[in-house]
Image (cartoon, rainbow, N blue to C red; front, side, top):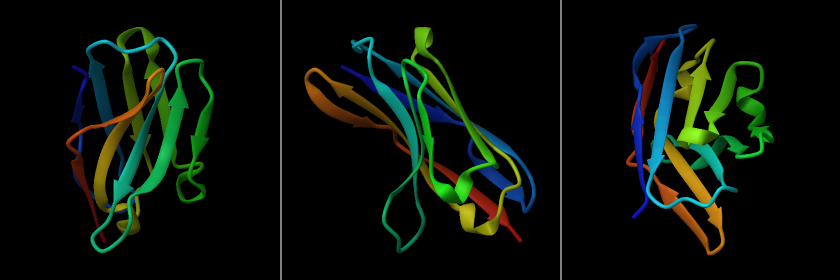
Length: 117
């Protein structure tokens, strides 16, 4: 059974920083993609950043230059360093693990990030 445990959300002022962590446990294939998505009230869930176990990274345009995703593949842990936060970054942030043999996605429980103006 695969589980994802997120931590690091909270309340921060505009321009501040937060660091999110997500640790995956269980039987996980060596090649996988871990990522961060977010969902604001009344909006669809959207990609923030995703990083593969071989190091390729993709970011949403809205966070490029402000957010940095890293991972420790040996520990199946992914981090999201968020800087220069804006009120529009306020959302529930979800960790996602994608595996490909078999094809399946796992989601974390979500962590709230609130940026006050």
